[in-house]
Image 1: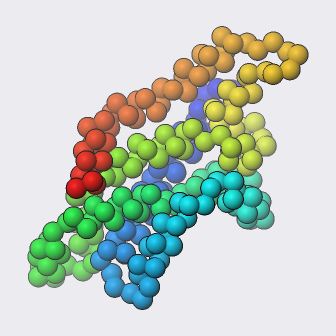
Image 2 (image 1 turned 90 degrees about the vertical axis):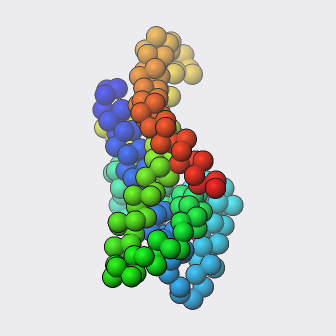
Image 3 (image 1 turned 30 degrees about the vertical axis):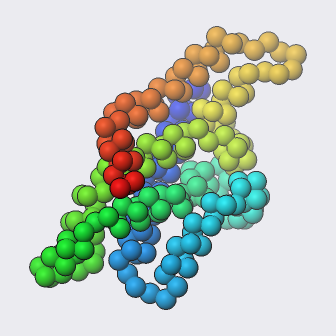
Length: 210
């Protein structure tokens, strides 16, 4: 059923987008505002993961997920895709533009690191969060290869896989009207997210580049 597949895709995209934002903003906060051994080495190690193509990472990731018994589950669909080197880099670049005076004023007021993070950095990061949310929501919604490997039950399949199954390549006739109608429906949530968050999305990208 199309509605079930769209619900699966929506849940997957939301979990991935929100999870990436939470992990990325906390990672960037630790890298920028805490001093610990090999701090920059950890950051560059995270960044270097961008150099590994999906084909290199996908089999060991699948093996770990299978061994943990997470096949045909939302945890298996989302957890391996949540970590984001790109998101960490975006938040790091933004945090480095935050004036040191804000941190000093917060310390004078007696605020600890996490109060400074919660009361100062998070409100300032709303536009960056919005930009990352839009990008990662579309990324999660359009996933094909990973859900194809992880899901075997029909009730866990996503809308992208459903569209692919509607396009028959053998003797049976493809019901193109059904496939095209489903494709149009599949476009609606990403388009709605972009339209609703367009202003914050653009501001987030511009402010991150400063």
